[in-house]
Image 1: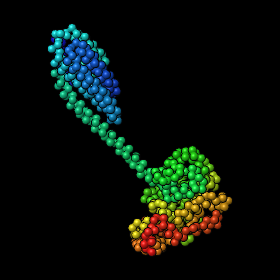
Image 2: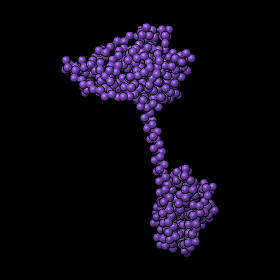
Image 3: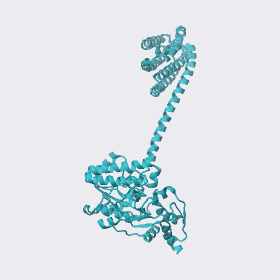
Image 4: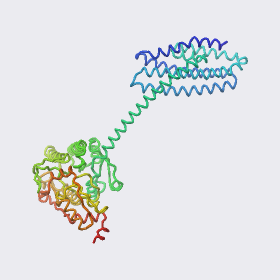
Length: 534
């Protein structure tokens, strides 16, 4: 009799399921948030109701029925947790689209939970209850009272919960409703998952781009780990103590550099980070080597401008603020085609044609300005092309003079990217580092200017190749002219006039071309090939 009455009630209430779902989908934006809260509460009460029904039935039916209901409750609890998580995810994902989509998904999920619960309970009741009804009819009265009380409470709270309870009272009608709702739910979930995947893909692409930008940016500057930074740090540590010289760069240092003395990560474009390093380590001298060289700078002008100019401004401001002594190297690239080329004096017209040269002229002038305006102890040397066996060529126009030694030892063949007669001023790295330390230590009253030329020798690719072939006669040299680098070299000085440096603070070089070639070949490890040639 109870089941017959329930079936009648379910038939009368089943129509309200379709009407309620349609009404929920057409609610206005102003009711979306309240309906979402109501539905969330309905879900919680539905779980509570299923628990109360399960407990009541466990008291009134046989052990078999208790086990069946326990499994049903466990399934309902699992579904409830899944629905809650899905509801939270759907609401969070749908905020950017519309609140109405979240409400639709919430309604579908809540009805689906009720349908699943009704299927489990109805199956258990239809199978087990007829067998044990005569024996446990007195115990079934609490069940009926519990169901009625739950229905009353759900109607008072929201229409959605009453719909869920009505579905639970009918098996035949619920199955048809659940099938149609399952299709709607599947479509809704598919759309939600598609939106979720699209959003996740967008976020992933954004993070990857940010990372790439980060990765493309982090490999650009050559600061303490550049051609000169490591060598100067080694020389200064011998002179002032290992722990009194800190090497810094944006790149990861090689193992031998990392273990040779203090190293700190720094980004020349991060003013706050640079300032913290200076303050925390009580820095008194700052040597600024971070820059993009000539050919590399022409390939990425925007980055060269940031690193070479903005980075310089950060260093100047920090040095002036904290009373530091500042050394900044300049270059032969600071001169242009209108400058005197042979020789080029310290003071003359400077009209460079590269962003690297422009940034170095800017550094020279800004350093002098800060010296006169704020009393900053600014010192600068214009380096010629620097030749070193410790590092590979780094993208400079004069790097052919380094590459020829590596190629001569490894392959016996060298292809030069400048014309054979292109003459440029050059210097071995030991002379360069010694000149830097001497300039830094020179008494202030001996300096007649803030920026000096220094020089050691001047040669062309053809002259260098001939000198190398004296040691390695089998070396084959060919020329494949790089027009960009050739144009840069043609605008640079052929020879430096460094008489002021020699007169003011006693500069004197040690390496000429023959000594340079012999030292480079010995250092790279060509003794065996030299002995075979002799």
